[in-house]
Image (cartoon, rainbow, N blue to C red):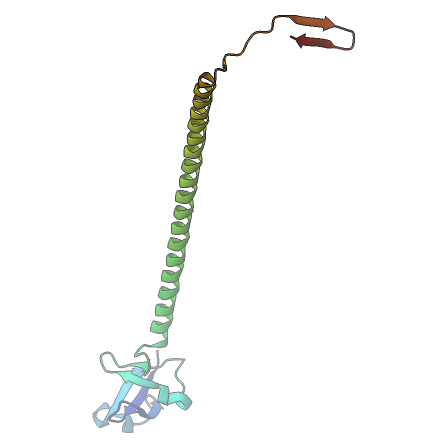
Amino acid sequence: MSKTAIKLDENRDITSYAPYPYSMVQDTNKGWILVDDDPAFSIDQKYLWTVRESDNKLVYKSTGKTPDEETKKSLTNLTKEQLNDSLTKAQLQMALTTLTKEYIEDRANSNLVTTELTRQIADLTIKLDKVMGIDPTPQSPTEVKSVATVDGAVISAQ
């Protein structure tokens, strides 16, 4: 990778830039800093850039990161968001399953309650009939007639 010579002011703003080696004027003893070239760096936008002290890399002032580091961070964040979305979908599926189970259980309980209420009403009706003097026992018919014809059978009870 080719090198670039950069000169910074006291605020770490880039004041001078030159491909290296350009001349002996870019001696590091005279305040020049040698950095690896970055294809994203543009001298026209040098006000957006600085040199990171820890490793002498060209970085954006706003983030303190190289373009590659920003790209990696963006990819990491996107991956985390996708995982969070997946987790959210899994949580929604689990919630829906839980609600469905509760609905089925409620429905079964409702059917049991309806059956029990129907049985109790039948028992109360029989008791009420007895109090009123009505015999709740069904009576068998005294006479049953059965007639068979070519068109079908007719059964009547008296």
